[in-house]
Length: 542
Image (cartoon, rainbow, N blue to C red):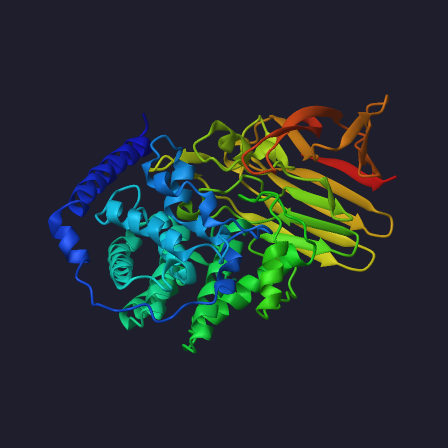
C-alpha cells in the first residue's frame, strides 16, 4: 500500500468517526431543543407555482391525490434508496392536480410530521430535507391553504426546525449541488415567512458557493455541462423569487446567470445537441428553453471557446473539441479523460462522438466510461490519459494534470481549423500528442492529423485512435482495408486512413442515462516511432 492510500484511509477513518459522533449528537434531546428554538411565524407568501417549473419535468396528465396509497404511504418497508428519496423529498407533489382534495394532501403531510418530528439520519439528509422544504412551500395551495390552525402550527414549526438543522449542516456537505438546493430552501423559507435572517444567511452562503465553484468564465469548475444547467435552473429560480416579492436582486446573482446563460446558449441553444463530455448524457433541454422564454430570459454567446471546449458550427455541421485541462481534484468526480477528443455532427446527428457517461459512480462501468478509451482521441498502451484515485468517500478523482499548448482556432466561411497539444504522456513515454482538425464546410470534408512529437526519454508504445459512433450507425470496411463506410439516418460518410491499420471494433455506448448499448468504433492503430509520426485521416460525406 502506498503512502497516499494510507493517508486516504486515515482521513476516511477520521471522517467516519466524526460523522458517527455528529449523528449521535443530532439524535439527542439537547440538539432537538437547540433547533426547536423558533419564532412563531406564519406562512405569508404563497409563491407562484410556475416559478418552480424548471425543477420538474412537465407531465400532461396530473394525478389526483386519491390515486396514491394514502393510508400506507409511510409504512413502506422494502424500498430502494432512490425511491426512498423521492418519497420523502415530496417532489411527487408537483405531479398532483391542484383540484385534488387539500385535506387529503394535508393529512399525508401531517402523518409524516407526526412520524418524523425528531431528527432521523436518512430522512433529514441535506438534499432530501431541502427538496422537502421547497416542495411543501411551493405547493402551499395544496399543502397549507385552508388548513386547520393546529395543522398550520405543526407545519410552520417543522419547516423552521428543518431549516435550522440545514443551516447547521449545509457547510459540511461535500456536494456543491446539495449546497445550492439547501440555499434555495433557506432563501425560500425566509421569503415565505418574512424571516430576514434566513434570507441574509442564504444570500451570503450562495455568494460563497458561486465564488468558490465557478471559474473565471463563470463555468462550473467541474467542466460539467449538466452541472451548468443545474446552476442556471436554481439561480434563476432564486432570482424569480426575489423578483416576485420585489426584493433587491444581488449583483453577483445577475452576473452569474448572465455568464452561465452565455455558456448554455453556446453549448445547447445554438445546436440543440447534447455533447458527451465530462459527465453529460443525452439530455434535452427543450422544456427549460420554454421556461426561459416564458420568464423573459434570452442568452447570446459571442465566443466559440469556453471552459476548455471549442465549438464551431453552422446550419448543417458542428465540431466540438475538448482542449482543456482536468479540473481541480475536488471538482473532478465526474471528469472524463478525453482531452483532444471531439464530436462531429451533420444535421444535428452525430457522425463521430464520445461514448457518454455512466452515472452510477461506484459501478465499474463508471470507471470504463471515464477512461480515455471511451473517447475519440489517441491513447498509448491502453492507458488512460488522466489517472484516477479513490478519495476518502470512495469516489474517483483526478490524480494528475497536464499542460495544453499550441492552441489555435480559426473559423472562416470556407474553412474551420482547431489545433492543440497535451503533454500527459511525456513523463512515461517521452512524447506529446498534437491534434489538428480541419473542416471544409462546402465539401463536407473533415481532415485530421494526430502528430506524435518526440521529447526526452522516449519509450516506444502501441497507439490507438478511436472514433466512436452512435449505436444506430451502420459501418462496413472496404476490401482494401483503407476505408470504412458509415451510414446513419440516410447520410453516408467515408472514413479514410492510408498509412496505418484501420479496423472496426465493438464498444459500449453510455449516452443514455445509466444504461449501455453496444456500438461500433473505427480504430486506427500502430507503434510509435523514435523519429515521430503523423497519422492522417479524413471523414468525407458521400
